[in-house]
Image (tube, rainbow, N blue to C red; front, side, top):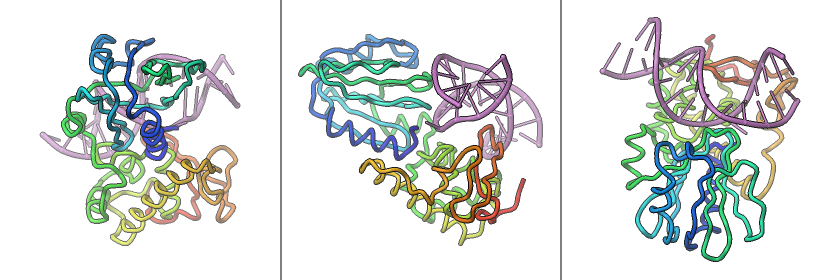
Length: 265
DNA sequence: TATAATGTTCTCGT
DNA sequence: AACGAGAACATTAT
């Protein structure tokens, strides 16, 4: 379930477990995962070098090797990183396996194959070339108001548009809108400054709380939408059955009573 | 068996 | 031209 908070968990895992370790081997089980690069290129860029730095931007993870190359992890719908002991079993859908000089291994596992592992010489250039917007947690309220408030379309797809804001996906966009009391089909332009300010604040609250919950191994709060999101789900605040609506090709879940701001359809 | 699932990208229409 | 909506992509679980 990788959106910004989950990728942040991967970053911390990478930071504590992979940084400083030298890559000795790289096995690519599924060549398309490299998005046009060859296994030889990935091996050339990483083998013999240690990972020395890792950072997250939105849903992307950038890991730098001593050699200066950045390895870019895109997790798609089901991607994840798994650290293995020397005798540990690889996950079922391992696409790439990095072997460290100490015998440990790191797997890039991705059941649905929407993820990829790419190479980049420079993070900023990569972001620009791929039209990736600012990290959702790095956007100030003023800029956020401009980004969302100037959108002609619906607010939910705007929150999920990675060129506008980087890091929010289908599940967390529903949660953020629920916390802000705004309908997912409200038009961005229809929101006033007060609503945009609240949306920005709740976006930060949701993402930061989720990061902390994941880091401490706790579930998301039971009074959030997410634990109830799905068939027969009820609003944890008012008990109203949650409504589902197809928006921009995805399923939005919301409470029609608690989320009354913005009228559209 | 049909449907839906946490993402990105391409195509088409406005 | 710029923007927004929907389909397609691969695979599995319900």
